[in-house]
Length: 376
Image 1: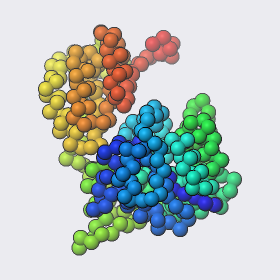
Image 2: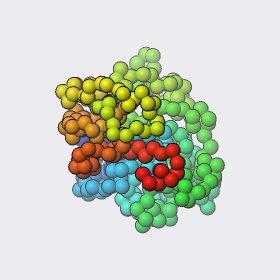
Image 3: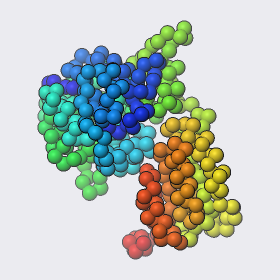
Image 4: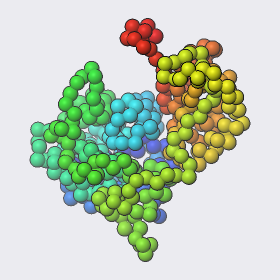
């Protein structure tokens, strides 16, 4: 079986991405390619990118497949937003998986056709620490099971990967579907968990259960993972997955938190069942726009920060919500989530919310009985 690794950068911006972010004096993408070159079961690597990402990528490898001028792909953008709020290899918003990140079935299929691959191995371009032994194990697992159309490593982002045979990839391209659909539970289509199926590659428990991420997709990740790749004498040592996990242990608390919830206003027009009655009497001043601008500037110093607007009140009732959202974006916070009852006093606020471009809107629909829930 001719297996080719596909590293898709379609979810990454034109400026700060895997081809420009540095790790140990080398581009993150260069590390990913170097590690994959140590695999004995791969027949090459293809980097899939937009035209505006091409120049730095071409300095790192000749195996590049350009997707042309950058265009809006709503489904891919939705997956990208969902993965900002997901820490494991699967789960979270949209039931997405790490293998869906940057996945455009048509473009991946075209890249596979050009390379004449029988199967593709999906690898995050920011996986600069990917373990070649695990990738070889993934390909061997698929070779030994010719009837299985896909195989996957159920481990932490940065080490995980998924193999898709050509026939399955063609069907995904026709249906514009994502491979994560094969790995997550959907109530309307019950199935056995793939973890108990033939497609799942056996991995050590310590690797399957680590709560760390090992992708080099933010400066925070680069800073946290760098010490584990250097010996005491300062020389370079990029270890295998087992050594990396044992060296790191639990994630250290950062100077700036990754997740921050900000209450804009304590008032709401409902009395939801999930809040104590005392919350209805909360008397706190609403947040001032100027004060929030300072908070956002501090939070944005962490490039993987996630901001939730919620608390005791409903953010939609704050008169300056559009300006607040604009200031959060201007500060550089990419991941924004808002919790609301979706009952604004000004109906135009819903249009403003829809046009704000934030990642997630959580709408509370509290009810004691099924009939009440259905009416709401």
